[in-house]
Image (cartoon, rainbow, N blue to C red; front, side, top):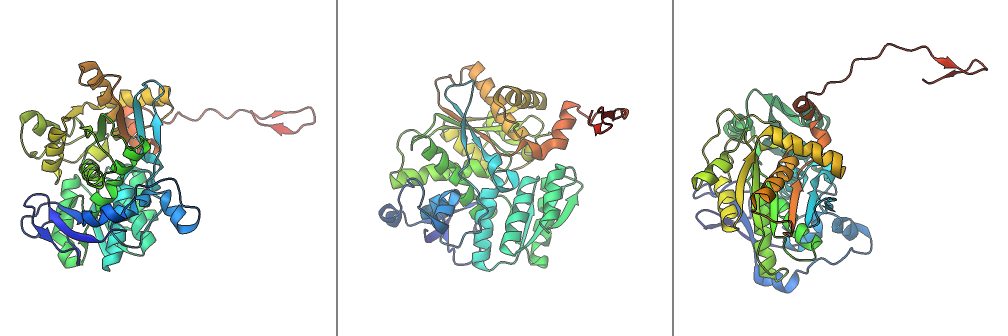
Length: 413
């Protein structure tokens, strides 16, 4: 595993020590990136090849920790996260779906929270707090339970019920808030010092990005250590997109991949599209989105803290940020269920819908090699997707009398 050289601010580029836990840059409150001695890593780090023969190393090879040569040196708190399937589309010859639903707790959030909780335990932190649109809360609750650390969760009251259930089941201190994730974030920020919580919010500490960057390593390795032409990423807070871009930079410095980086396509719902609006308007950062409402609850982030980074990355890559209405997202969700056998999360369906739109517009061709991210299991959104479909449980039928065989033994209808 890699020794951390320093923490670099993405905004002012000043460096801070990683000897003690950090949230954001102490000079300008910018997002901090973990930096390693790349000269040393070029001599010591090796591209993963296959699986270790047995034991603990083999277990790690089957998870995101197969990239431990480029992750912080700490004892992992792992539940087997990462190394998720890259599924080829049955209808589009150059399209792959990165299926993050197979992660522990059913979403990509397991990656970032595995790394963040690993480092929290490494630093001796005992009380963690997070505002969440739902899935990060479940992941923090799970990894905190595995690490023996207290978790304090704040979520909007109308999150998918599965998110609330898992937080309670894992023993987290769970508070439902009448409001949005932004309201939850204000509560965590205002109470953290008094309560002794370490705020583990999206991009407000440096290690969730480190966990999420493994998605970039994986997709390149799974494509034979080659870049795709484009990557579609459902974007609420944007940590995964930020992390993948960091992974591409590191792999290039290590000589693990060459060529043109993929165009990064960030996808939002039209019911909450602060990044898409800022992208269209040519703004360097987003403005708060009033009245956020979408059944893709993970995209309901009215003002992402890392917005300027997401906008810069999409522009630099030649990509874009777009948004789609919920009815288009739902139609794509049902299309992929019925024709690909995959029940996507609403966020994942936003990516598939965006792919169809960019094919029609000519921005992409069918010859382009494209990776779409399904960021979570569709079954975690049963209540929200059923509501969007207008689907209700059928009324019970009148009970029928049991049939009997000639010997008088009852049989099922």
